[in-house]
Amino acid sequence: MSTLTDLQQQFSLPGVVAIEPGTNGLPRVAIATPDADAHVYLHGAHVTHYQRRGRPPLLFMSARSYFETGKPIRGGVPLIFPWFGPARDPKLPAHGFARTKSWTLSDITRADDGSVTVSLTLAADDATRALWPHEFELVYRVIVGPSLGLELEVRNIGHAPFAFDEAFHTYLAVADVRAVTVAGLGNRPYLDKMDGARLKTQAPQPFPIVAEIDRVYLDTPDAVRVDDPGLARTITVAKENSSATVVWNPWVAKAKAMADFGDDAWPAMLCIETANADRHAVTLVPGGRHAMRANVKDEPREAR
Ligand code: BG6
Image (cartoon, rainbow, N blue to C red; front, side):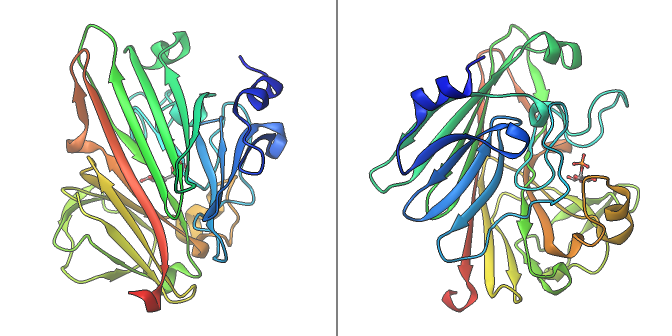
């Protein structure tokens, strides 16, 4: 494994990209472009921070998050692969293993417009095979520009097909979740995990968040918008090659039950997760590739 000094020598771009010890000394890439700042940890390939210059942070981070080997980071963008939610075997980690593995930093490039792309990779090893017996390679690209671009490419490098779920578990920062409305999911079917995963249909109009919510929306290839009057902004989550969208807020009781989440932190976040899960799980034949993309941006409400 490369040391921090190796990574610094290989990837630093003075004034733009620094490889530095982050919380608890875990290595992270700190990016500063003309448009935005961002942090990406090698632990979980986890984006913990993105902020347009002069605007509030786009992403919520739990002040009580663990930053520890083997534990997921709470907030930012946990990367979910190869299964979403609890595994069939309760001994396996929820939401897969990608978010707790140490990823390899493979490339950092700067485009003519000043945006920076950080590429990280993860491949099957003995530990992943013990949890999920498939030969895969992942390439995750985080594009830091006037918006936050995310791309997860999954490659099947084995001799048998495999199926997987995936998600960018984006924790959006909001002023007060009780005041936001969510648009872009109207008329769509969803599995209501607050009601035994019953299949329901969303009403056509934008909806508010009025209680704990945990839903997997299906057939949702289009962008989702979160209108936040408190921060006077609209966040748009656009996507490609993603058919599911998860909407989650733990509300009061679940927030209290989570050790890495402040009891009173739930009003400040809403997860809008770009995903392929449930009946939208992806099957890849040997040699096959699949790339899911999201683009997350915030704009002042007046600009719409
Ligand atoms: C959401 C799930 O995506 O993630 C919820 O739909 C889950 O059911 C939440 O509670 C948080 O999961 P975790 O494993 O990060 O606590």
